[in-house]
Length: 80
Image (cartoon, rainbow, N blue to C red; front, side, top):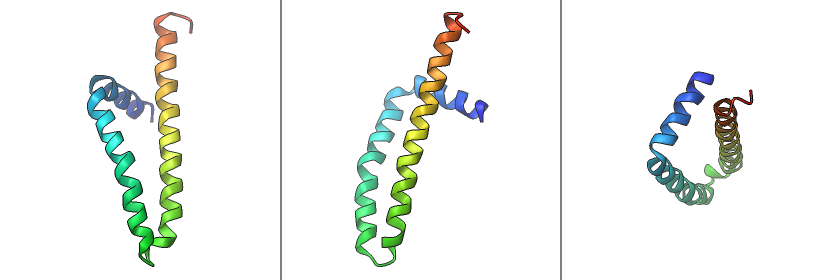
């Protein structure tokens, strides 16, 4: 997991605008798709689970990126 997190952090730092664009696209497209899914009988049970997963994934991703950046800054300043 740390190797993947390091690679992901480097990609986000190098391709900030691309990452931001993909994130914004997903942010706006996902609710539309979920609303369309809830219109169907089959999609109603999936709506809650998918919505909870997305919220959890976004929160966890933000925490991991902030943690990695924070510790990198502390190492550069030789505080740890």
